Length: 214
Image 1 (cartoon, rainbow, N blue to C red):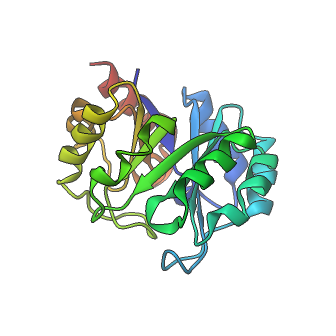
Image 2 (cartoon, rainbow, N blue to C red):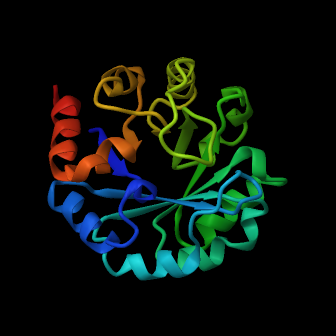
């Protein structure tokens, strides 16, 4: 089963509770929350207070993507705030095995993200310890970027390494290209602009799931 994880980075920040309710009412089971520190990525989004506040309004799985330097410093706080999945970047971790263990010890599922220029081969020694792999299909930091086509090959490579692992893809995904992404093996799709654009989030969610089910 393929699922959609709307990225609240593209939602109306003055109306987050209602935007979340709309997509969950339309059938969404995951919400994707990008935490950016302005150091690992060239943008600042939101942090712990927002995660804590939204936990009360998100019924489904809270998928927290830490685009930060030294993620180990924040893992306990974000799991305590209610994160169900915590994703850290391979490129940001000095001791990745330790970071994965820290996530799991604190009660969340552990995921690792790889940037577009990072080969899948870096996951060989740790993939058996992961609950999910996030394949970035744009360079992280900003929404609305164009999907990098080489991502399809990387999705297939991840599935070859671990056929049963959850593969999430994030960046540049639209109703026009999502089918080829799921056919490559992705089963959790992050979409921001293409979900929340022009106030048609419920319609857009239903259109994504219609494609998933075909």
